[in-house]
Image 1 (cartoon, rainbow, N blue to C red):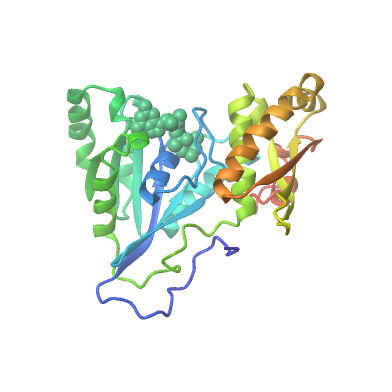
Image 2 (spheres, rainbow, N blue to C red):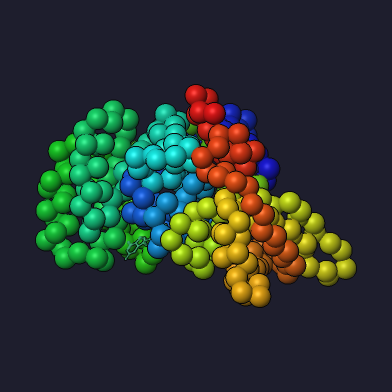
Length: 314
Ligand SMILES: Nc1nc2c(ncn2[C@@H]2O[C@H](COP(=O)(O)OP(=O)(O)OP(=O)(O)O)[C@@H](O)[C@H]2O)c(=O)[nH]1
Ligand SMILES: [Mg+2]
């Protein structure tokens, strides 16, 4: 599955007349549930999800296909005013997804007023085909949602949907709305593909998700993961995976390793369980912690770590 996550050319396979396919960007403020929605729409846990804002750092494609449609979902980092180079890269990733999208789904958290204000402005200025998804409907009472729909309805949305993504409530209706908005086109990817991301990227993300769960405050945001080795071995031996956790300062290294190695062991064992379930195979996971000073603020380091950094940054 090692395909560049850029846009593919439509496939040359014979396809049903009237087939619809396109790229669908999920955008919104941090923590509103974009990644949870992507997973619910595709039906697989592809994108990492945590209660912390700014979990998603780069785009991830998740592909839904059926006999007559292919929706290539683009999960994006939450939009925020960037304060340093990594956040500028994240914003760029999100905004550039809008250029590539045939359809934009603006996601709001029904209980989070800034996300509603964002959607009102965003909807009014966006000319592309667009749907509004009011997520986290479990958090507010029905009249509140009806009021939101009335307030946000004027922006010319091609559809407005209510969801509670972790329970899958409203997601089938949202998917149907999305599919009906796609342009007539052959599929972009083989219909059996779920994503374009290489397996190593999923492994790195599962480790990062565990760091976000296990570490507090700024520390998990200062961790970048690089998978150094991924070796499938014969004879029933577990797959060998070696990953480096880059932190920004020596003091963070101490925190990530923990007293007597307790924290890194816990990150390792929880990550291994997740990776084994994702790959459906036994894994031996080796984690090492290294300092890469201030990597979040350094364009060169970010590029080495695989982030897309605007050309003017250095
Ligand atoms: N109660 C409730 N929680 C939700 C819902 N959707 C998502 N969540 C939770 O909200 C948190 C954030 O979800 P994510 O899917 O990571 O949000 P995101 O928009 O991708 O966040 P970023 O990647 O940080 O921009 C997680 O704890 C989810 O379980 C929902 O409909 N109701
Ligand atoms: Mg996310």
